Image (cartoon, rainbow, N blue to C red; front, side, top):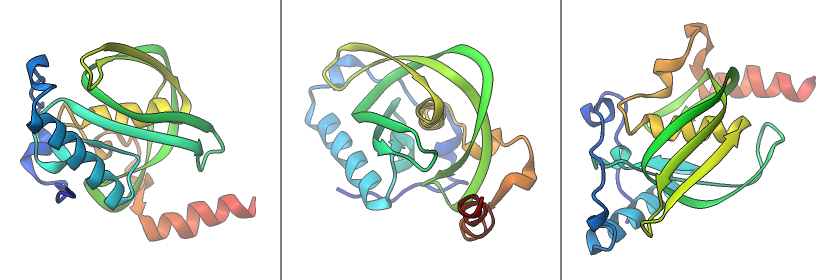
Amino acid sequence: MNKEICLMGNPILRTTAEKIDMSELNTPEFKALLEDMFDSMKASGGIGIAAPQIGISKQLALIELNGVNRYNEFIDLPLTAFINPVIEILDEATQGYWEGCLSVPGLRGFVERPRHIKVSFVNQHGEDQSLEAEGFLATVIQHELDHLFGNLYVDRINDPKLLMYQSEYDKYIIQKATMD
């Protein structure tokens, strides 16, 4: 079921979410949470969502990226559930991308994050997983997992001049990129 997205200012977005006990994974409530998150992500046009964004304090995020993105990178990540994730930075060098967020609608901000990471997590079947990511995928994973620890992308913007409304981003960043 499509749930209302919690917006910046909602206290749940600023707290560390509770770890998920593995005994929860086979419950009807957990399966309903996965469905609610997926439905909410798709209805909002997102590529990822975290449980706190629909008002649930659980360390669970979903990400799905398939195809070529706006940065001309091909990414094939089927729908993946990240439960109780831990990120390890494999390369301290940073990369920057323009980020948006379902919880911060109408805005875009330029954020620099570590370019190469490894995330260890449990999937929805209770299996231990790890995934190495670089480029845009590394950024997306860090963005979504930030939600589980009370952080939003706007907290990570180094230059406040690089936070803008989506309409201005479309006019001045996207249009300029297509003209170059």
